[in-house]
Length: 254
Image (cartoon, rainbow, N blue to C red; front, side, top):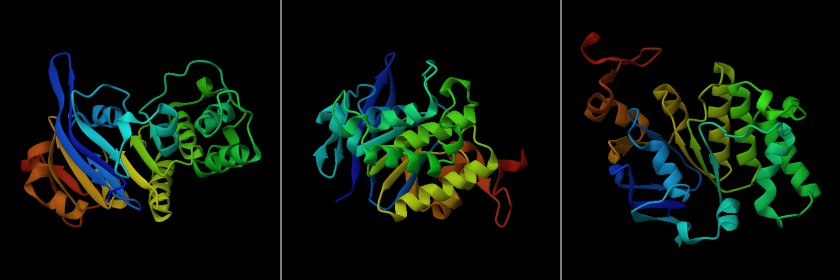
């Protein structure tokens, strides 16, 4: 049984079908990259899978149970989400922002336990954000904030992670480190679904890639196989360059 299964998900916004019957599966110990052109519905699909936006049809199963019907606290314990950016504007310390990832583990007014503190410290270290712990979150750069959001998701201890463009804003060293972290998390048995735009990152990070175009899943498979086929050219207007460092070029040499 897949850890996470999305079946026939449909999301309508402003009378437009943004996600159109999308289905995909995610196994424990696997990194799946969700790829597609701008406006394909990738972010909306992740949000709908976590009931952050309403879906008009379809279902989402976590270990066979209806994820959308779970109480929010239970859902937060089992699935962690990293958005593209945070709307947090209050001058909370980074440590406290990451600490919000532990709320689902205790009562609403529960004080942090030793286990909470250890989880927060480990998450900060994994995201290379430990040195930021005392700084106000809203004073950080975009890339630093992104690393804190990743740390917050890790602090939950959830076995399934959904990340929306987690490398956006990261410098090349931290982007490479995040790719390695995703692989390590999968090696520990977590299931990882990440929206990624850099197709070279997809090749390094993902076991499988799922191509979403106009809200529909058009193709999926190992990145090397998917990128060598016609689906990529049809979706992006690019083709793979065998042996090239950057790996891709515009179709027709444009």
